[in-house]
Image (cartoon, rainbow, N blue to C red; front, side):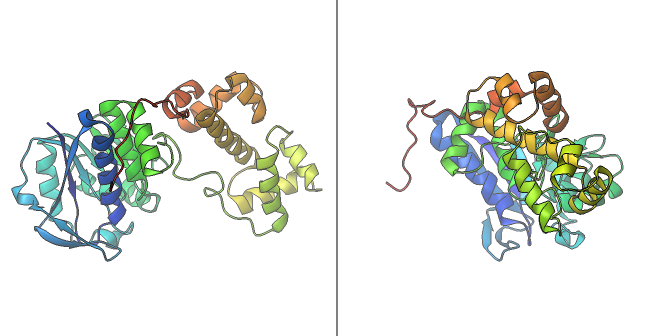
Length: 334
């Protein structure tokens, strides 16, 4: 029997919170007949539900009529502001009821707030869109909020960050059900970023920092990315900028939002991730190429930033051409 997935939506929901996971589950069945999922869309009332973007979808079932058993219950989010969930209070008791009839429960974006209101996150770790992380923590102090993560699993409750992270969450659910190989195949099929680990930050190194106003600092960021094997100590960077260490450190932190050392470490971690995903070089060579020196340092940095080891990261996210040459996905539309 197909795994039943019920996705809860409401007027003003984020369309990609529904479409992203739904396409992941659909692709799973297309690529592996033994991994079939059946997605249902439910809302307070059956019929047309208008998304935040203005696109209308059809909810086939009113929530009051949905009954278990349910394999996965997912709650979409809306605009990541307090106003984004206006009018959703009536969803809370239905979500609480359906959670009791589901094997696992999850949320995308600000949908985490609805899980919290339903009492499903009490004493648990959770993540959400970065814009509502503080609101979640303030309104629900019993929830351990980690708003810098792509997704978080705590037992049978899965929460994810904003918008596109719903795809990462769905890929993680498929990997849990059917293995990482299928999740990788789906990533390639949908032409999305290879499944990101839940512990990864919601932001890449450039996006997670402020753009410096001063052009020399912007140029320095590019130079760092291109010279990761070089001496990138604070002293060396200050010398590169023809300024004192004290002045350089103060200006860099003020304009970028983190210390030079932290920025360099995050840039090196991102480069190491790319090498682990795309190649077969040994860890000691990767550590040297990205300027971390030794496998031991590489391991410590990965544990600190991604909560998994470099070896585990490679095992889960490495892509090898023709690795599944015996698998022939169907050609849609033909």
